Image (tube, rainbow, N blue to C red; front, side, top):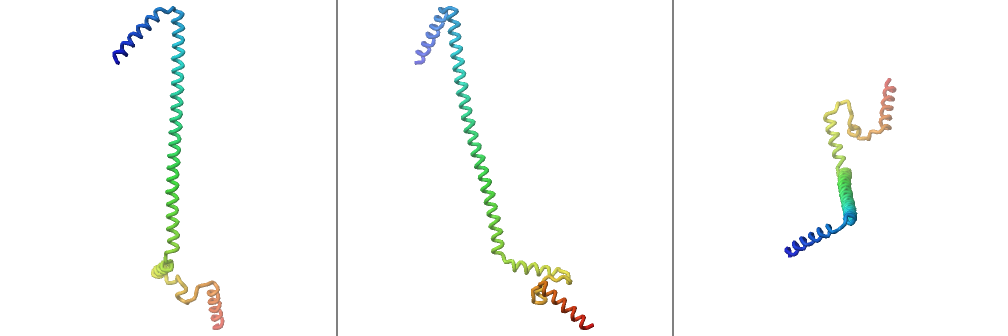
Length: 151
């Protein structure tokens, strides 16, 4: 088969050469113009096809990049939301499960151990009464009355 192809190419080329030599100058110019316009049309069509293919590829790549960026943004948002939920649950657990009375007692004990004797940390220990502004006012009023009565 390759021998037949080679023979056909040689015979076709020879026939084309003989036909070309038989043409007049005007006919040769017309053939050149026709072949030139045909080559230009083929080049334009192939260029248009290549540009359309590149546009389609660019669109697909842009869609892929946009969807990838959207997925990355969505993943980051989900991670941040998970962190916020985790911290919120820790805070809720801290306020619902921790024993603040025990912690407060420990802090009071530490302050009592390190405090100046003139500073009263907890008035409930001294009088077994809550320290309210009214109770303090009545104590100071009674103390003044006692001083006035003694004078």
